[in-house]
Amino acid sequence: MSHRSNIEAGHQLMEPELTVQFAGLKLRSPIIVASGPCSHEPCQIELAMSHGAGAVVLKTVVSDAYAYMRRWPRPRYKLLDWDGKVGGSKFFTLYSFEQGFPNTPHEYAKLIRAGKRLASIPIIASVFAKEPAEWVELAQLCIDAGADAIEVNVSSPHRPPELTIEEAIARIIRAVRDAINVPMIVKLAPSPQVVTHAKFVEELGADAVTLCNRLQGLEVDIETQRPILHRWFAGVGGPWAKFYNMRWVAEAASILSIPISASGGVLNAEDALQYILAGATTVQVLSAIIINGWDVIRDINDGLRHYLMRKGIATVSQICGRALEHLVKPDEIERWNGGPRARDWMYEPRAELKSVSTDADAHLRNSSVQTEVGAPVANVNIDRCTGCGRCVRVCQFYAMTIVDEKARVDSTRCTGCGLCFDVCTSDAIVWH
Ligand SMILES: Cc1cc2nc3c(=O)[nH]c(=O)nc-3n(C[C@H](O)[C@H](O)[C@H](O)COP(=O)(O)O)c2cc1C
Ligand code: SF4
Ligand code: SF4
Image (cartoon, rainbow, N blue to C red; front, side):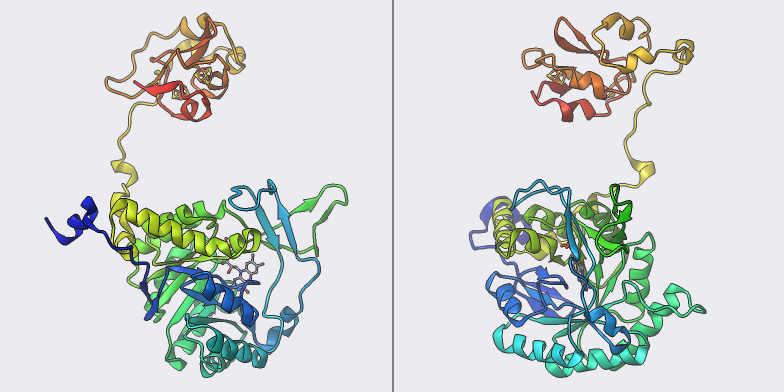
């Protein structure tokens, strides 16, 4: 049995190792505090350290060309769709408008120096400027102050009209790459092109990529008929961001040689594990700290350790990208026919079938086509079924009816979509 399979068979007794190598930095945990309001003061670097973060990315410092971004509107955060549950709420959108570090680059350098005195975890400076020379100047100032790495925040770079977005990014990355001697991490905006951009910046010499910054959105107040807050587009993010971002992390991990830091929608250890399994080496967290507090970092680290222990895996880096091995191309996915073949009666008006109906006959009388042999279909455990009718409502294939106060499946109509399983709170539906 190999060393790895020994460990996975449960012979590993030691506490799992969370240390990761990331862009030339050794981090004690893959969990990084993301750039934002949790990293603009020295005490926050201490908090990141004491709660177990592997590193901290400071709030983005902006060059003098963007001095107006150092001033913040009030208010600038709006918590939308929040269910009021601190610690673990799955439903919120943090709508916010806040741009640069609220002070000069000189003060930023003082923050880095203070951070280096107070904490031993790597401090990653985040920079944003206009012309390439200004990017270099900011990055150099941060390195001189002791920054361990630079996150080049090209989420929305200045783009002279004659340049494409790729050309605008390239001239910044080339200039910074040539000038600095610490790891360069490039933070990209979420977009359908982000995977291509990640490959592009790797070729330009990035040591790692952060995927991704937040989307810009807009919320309108229907009473005042105006955009909310300061009446301009705002950053939008929340636990829901994980889903689209995870896909980009997985796609990027399949084609990049440099490591990925995932950023977007992480609330807990499960989210962080999913990103790591999808190919992220490190995972950045911000909104969860803002909403639920610094203990989130400790909880995520504990959750990672428990998971690794339970799975008998020695180090977190062993699971990096594991889910990628199981990605299947669309034309390789196991498929079945899409349900009953078209018959003439399907083209007659049958709107009544769309309501919750207890008329079994209406559903069953034309069900004569056998489903494909071996195709999985739903089946109801009538001992558990309460006859609530939820499954009838969601079945878009008219396969569910209520007969004698119990759900019944017409297996010739069931397309095995799986939705009724999820709405049945009595756990009464099983595969057949
Ligand atoms: C209030 C706020 C301020 C932010 N400021 C910055 C910033 O200055 N620089 C930056 O690169 N990202 C900034 N971000 C984006 C975060 O670093 C992070 O990429 C994003 O919020 C997604 O992670 P999350 O879902 O864990 O919050 C900010 C996010 C929020 C919510
Ligand atoms: S949702 Fe479940 S409990 Fe409700 S009718 Fe359907 S099978 Fe029965
Ligand atoms: S699996 Fe889908 S098609 Fe089959 S009964 Fe349930 S909801 Fe209808």
